[in-house]
Image 1 (cartoon, rainbow, N blue to C red):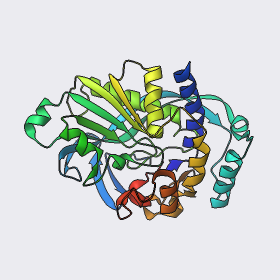
Image 2 (cartoon, rainbow, N blue to C red):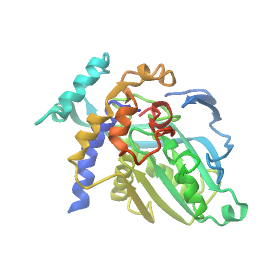
Image 3 (spheres, rainbow, N blue to C red):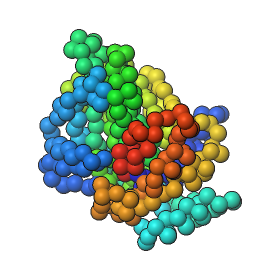
Image 4 (cartoon, rainbow, N blue to C red):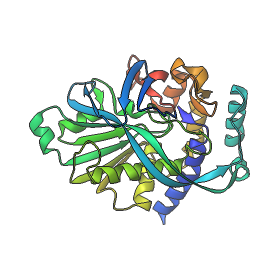
Length: 318
């Protein structure tokens, strides 16, 4: 699931990154989360070893990490959409030929500073010797229509298991406004520039050994789709953050973006699933498995029985 203007701000940031390349809020001490049918309670101070990955080849520790950052967002001249009709009409107006919607709605920079809770998981090889010897950590940043569960979908469909089997550690997280992380104002706060600053802050914490008291020698940024754009944006603004990067599901050709957004078939998240109940109308998700297939899968080269086509389990609150 995505915030209403996350993709909007990603489009603005996307063109900036490509041009450069080519020349819920919670206040208690403990928070209960429900996502994809699974309940998880985490404190802000105590890490939780929640066992193994879906395939059993990785040992993972999950916790909420408090991240304080300053970001230069965009000032958006738009209120929450009233209903689904308004969401669909906004998509039509944004994607129509010669649309000037972005120019009309963006009203200059909007600097923000805050502290947000980010759900994260540090995974190591299940073998104790391999875990001790893991010196390189891959920082995994998911796409706009997904949560961190993208990296560990099911046995045999786990990037985390593949990485730890090769001797790497992984650090995955739900981007702000997604999954089990905090869900602030979806229009003025949960924008692409903030996602970039949060990733930079998380990398800094990992380098300093501030997350799970574990230090690593090498840091590899791994992104998928818009997560690749965020990762690439970090390398542009903070070139010393990563020793290497892996970008997937992305391209230097921007013409595919409108087609993908149309395929997503956006629906107000609170109306799509009980898991998203109570979120503002500015958070939305893909309406059904048809849109997910259209955007991500080529038949018959996927498992239709897998969780990948399940809106609740594969699409984060974005």
